[in-house]
Length: 408
Image: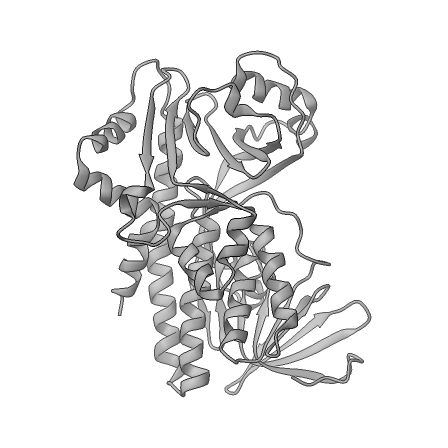
């Protein structure tokens, strides 16, 4: 890389990655490890403490092991081999154990660890790597490409900076500036309700007998998800679109949620409260010339099942593998990059979108004291080892990667 540091020169690099979330950070670090000069930029001043995504599925853990960071993640995470589906009204509990698919992965469990911890870990490593560089407070303002590369302008703390790269990976999130610059449509829909996330150190497990570290609680009136990370419980509930943010984030709203969970008005302090809109959207293209979309810039889904961050990391893994073949081994770019788009867009539509929509519908169906059709289907898995295995492999995202590999 070269630059005079004044903002007047153009910094050149083989790959420019925009967005220092988990997807961009994984992409940049893997490329740097492969000896490919890579620059990672982000509009924020650092990696913000984002409490939304916290589940790492087994294939993602395999990728983290290949990057050499799994041990550090496990040291700050919580293993969750067992997860539960609960009916709030009937009290019915269906428990599934990823340990049953230990022959299909060396990591038959979910790791509960907030995504920002991975982003911070990797950006530190990228900044220290001889083939990596990280620059925060760089907001993309223009992007142009030609037959030989991509030119990007970004607003820095002092001046407009210019970059030139062979390829650009747009991992700049749901509101991707690059996707908008390219004019790529983002098809899908936005749910009418929003999601409210509350984090607390209150020991919920002492009040709900037999609670696992990952729990999906069905109820037609107010379903919820209870996820445990080290030191905290994360509680996710739907939030009516008719209420303003201040009311939803108020103590009264928080108290109502926990009273419903605990069955009384025990005071509960929260560490974090967030409201966000939820979308099911897929970009019409994941590739435009030398610019590739990955993660939330390419696809969005509701968080039920923990597929969002993981599918984005899988995008990054697929794409960086192909860029290594192109840059380090001289393979023709177009066939490989077109295949990236075919593979990841198909998996996003066929698995991630369909499965997350189904997961939400299941939680909304718990409307009676008796078991629901969805619960009966899950209970049927307990007596059918073959179907249970397939279900676990699909929910663990192992089958989606097998399906991806089969797409020519």
